[in-house]
Amino acid sequence: MNYFKRIRKDRGYKKIPLKVLYFILLILITIRLSAQDTKRDNMNTTKKNTMFKNIEFKSEGATLRGRLYFPEGVSKNLPVIIMAHGYSATIEGMVADLYAEVFCHAGFAVLLYDHRNLGISDGEPRQQINRWTQARGIRDAVNFVITLPEIDSNKIGLWGDSMSGDEVIFVAAMDHRVNTVVAQVPACGRELPPPDPDGSLFESLKNTFLHGDIEGTPETTLGPMPVVSFDQETIPSLLKPLTAYRWFIEYGCRYNTKWVNNATYVTPNVPTKFNSVLCIPHLKAAILMMVAYEDEMEGANSDVARYAYKLAPEPKQLIEIDGGHFGLLFYPSKLFDEATAAQTNFFIEHLK
Image (cartoon, rainbow, N blue to C red; front, side, top):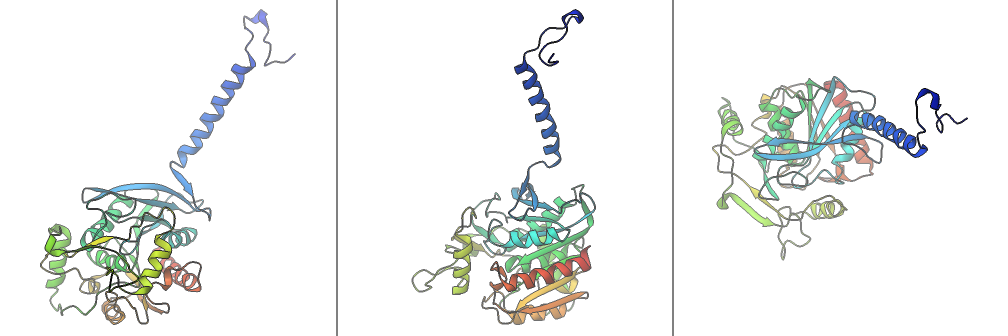
């Protein structure tokens, strides 16, 4: 006799249709799977089987969005690397995500997010770039990760490329919760800043960062203009070199990056202009700077970056690389492999 088909009537039971039993079984399986999924709430998997979940946090009244990567098999006391891309670049498909995957496979949690006004993050006006706002976003990312139960709040690293490379130096000097920094081809400026023997310029920068009005005005805003252009005579752009045009068009125009070839750049009217070189002597974090031999981007003058490195306290490391400003952002490439290996080793030494 089929037990599931017929129940003994002398015990007061009634015949239960197979369809009902199958339906109950389906519900139980669904509940079981849902319980498993809850442990990986909102989790996604990359092509390299790296797990991440979508996250968001507040900064300057806007919601910033990104990904939180977790290494497989570890769920507590994780060192974390906070990452944001350079200038107007976004996190989807523009190679910063590939750096994040390498760091995650090395045992780090990674928070990778889009700056305010860009990509998947909120903020108005859209496509407006402001170093001060982006730096405050990095600080707020630190505020966010230290609330997470999986993260060791004493092991916070920052990673930045180009403009965000400049910004992570700035933020780490202001916020000593950060203990490791990797700055890749940092855009530390066109020229050296004035001397600051008594630290007054640094204190001015710190006061603006913490309390100042950093909003732009029409007089302090450049653009809107294309981010890159193949012809500066007829279509001038914010970034001039053809190497910038080549990289942004090749990677930014890929599917679903949400990169837009248009932006405004704000230089707020503040007592002391944003400058990481004035800040770097005040670092408490270990720093690795990867500097192009002869960077073609005016704002990433290699001599200025080398000078900044000299001012940085120990522990520190300088690696000079070939490939210009964008060479480290081509994947797959030998330069990418060399850069990620050196950066991973530095994070392991100073952050784990």
